[in-house]
Length: 442
Image (cartoon, rainbow, N blue to C red; front, side, top):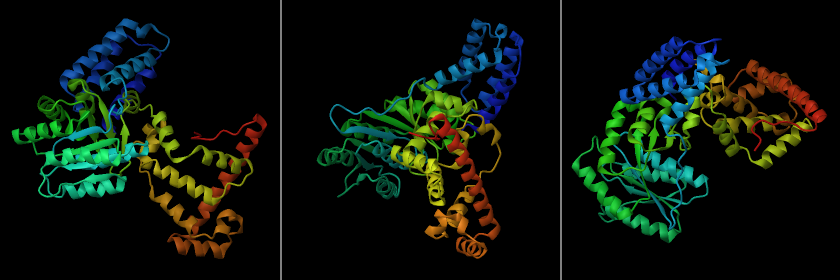
């Protein structure tokens, strides 16, 4: 996410942090570099000009070059203005006074609108809502079938056209179906086009009249750069928008769309898509994204993802096992699966402050985790609980069963033994202090 922008801004601000003192000329030079970095990220020229002016005004007003930590103060000012640029606050889907809460998704072909509908249904279902999907995109071949597939994966009912219904009839029937099922969320996947035209605008207007959406959200491809701003303005003029969902941020090297649209359109970003998986949709927090852009990590999102995978009961049981030195390879496998469920490993590691910059350009091998799972899966239950019993012949059998080598099995067992030894030492420290600290404890 924002790789190029993060790299450029990170290097600029790192140099500022390292300075013992700053002059007005130093601040101006840094702002020129920041301006160039934003323009290279395809941020709108008007947005860049306003951003740099606000940073300069704040920096001059605080006379940062006279303070004890001038570099840190400039970084703090840039962080604050970047957060302001992105929208200042998180916006969530609030329930309507009379269910269902209707969400109309609009956008052009190729932005990932139908997939986003499924992701949004899965996201809301995790949070206790009961979503229904309406297949009102009848212009694109196989759009209805695609929505039915992602709807099934998300565990949501899909209302598809029947008997020659048009998009307006599907949307109206979906509202009725929600009330029959006592569903509290309706997500309408509307038609798209290669560009905004009169036919699309007319159809969207009729669908809006039939469904009476509480939220009209534009699904926008983050890789479009400044073109995204013009397209968003076109949609907003035709169909008043309440917010935006940015997709394909996992492949966006520039990030100009996110920075430009939020500021130009003056509409909040509700969600961002960070991958192809059904769970790769996360609420948009401007301060957290600003922190990621500046290479400062995103601990809060990391904790939230971890808490989705580890319940309080599981954390308590893990603590008990650690206290009694009963942590086994079965527990280790469970921990690996929980980490993998949090998302792509490179994204997870990039949320740890300071680690994202170090991993820049490095290849994170998720296949290694799969090989570890395969080796542990090739062991008997007794071997997983008591790895000390695994002798040479057993190691050869495990290697054959997992498609790995004896050397890889040896390395796994050696690393696990070292990890258990370290955990015993931590347990001893925790016992002396009266408690045992656990990472990601809910």
